[in-house]
Length: 285
Image (cartoon, rainbow, N blue to C red; front, side):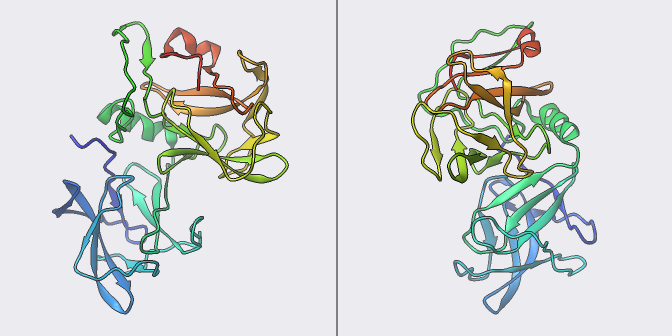
């Protein structure tokens, strides 16, 4: 089985499947659409693996040029008014069979994309039933992360190195961009904070300067811009306010808390979930 989530999509105009089982990309049926770029017209078969940028086409795809995509069935141009966050090119929406859509950037070489589900709980249940904890998007545990966790029929353990599918608890949209957990940050200025979504991997970067050992003013969902801060839920290590996101476990979405002080590596779950779920080495984020 492929180690990543293979999407099945259809045209947002005529609702017909865009999947092409005769042309495999990344060893999976591909997404076939018409493409026009640089004065050329033809077809392109995109990888259906979320996070893969591989494709097959007989056209020359000049870097940084914006392409026009259309449906091979109804010939309608597939586009939306939303612009790419990175390069300002139009985004291209493709409807998911499970409900929702995946949007890709129309600029050749740009890797921006996002997934939105109509009903997050239905989508998660389908992914977990079909593929397990991380969906068919089973990210490999980073090198050097080992686990000696024994199987426990009574309690589910999320192991160190597990990729945490993360969502806004308000609008339910994914907070994963590429292989990072993205949050909007407000301090003396506004910017974005990128965290490792792998449990107990503590890499981070920010577009604004953050003083060490200081709490941030606010952390927000970058989609709906609703604050994620839960002042009543204190960090159990340093006592600072925490921020709440939802992460996917095998059976449900969990409230997952991180400390808002730069340098503090505490994280934790809602008390009600501690009876069913445990995080391996759960003192740090």
